[in-house]
View (tube, rainbow, N blue to C red):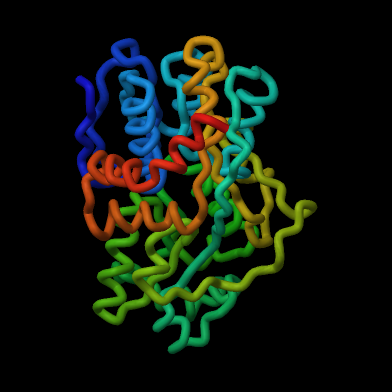
Length: 316
């Protein structure tokens, strides 16, 4: 099958054909921007190099393991430092994966809808440790406010558990893990109903174009106070970790199997040169989630409209 028709949504993409059926296999985790980028890379490679490219769903660890084994070839959007442990294992230690150096700057933090923040004077992440404030976000009547900390399988979700423990609001709020599309639909419904909402927020993302959000203030990032261990590294990761400061700036990088440098050097060269910016990636998420554009059709239009940039990836 030459082209993959993907279902809309970050977790409902159609499963691709077996890896060996395609020249290049791109892994696709479960958030909108990585889905958009994956389709853009697919279209760029197929149209300009005549290769068959398939997309396969997978979590971050699965995609890295597959790039190491040769079952997959590309991770379109690795968040650093979120996936630092996977990067260190496969890029530094095993040297089986390469990283594109052109990172897209990203922010991560906690947000409250602006209406709630203004009404109740919520400005700081420390406010979430106040039981009276926390109770405002009780949407199911159990007496404890809900706080969305991310989707299952995200490295950032584990970090948000650590941060909740470190700040103390894990004692006052129920930490919920649900798919992003559901979480932000809940946000949209809450704002329409005038109900409070609190949860993880990040850029590049469409949410800031849709809603006024209060980013909660935190102590500045301090490397000496950011001690984060992931579950893949230690079974006692939560107990031994501490991160009572803001996230450092993150950067999103394409990663690809180093074996491509031998099997498809033209593809490896392109992947090493791919470059996006924060506004571009935010627009991608808006197009797929809010405008509900079909990912493959969006990617085809994007590649056509950005022909010079795409050709530049292949010639630099």
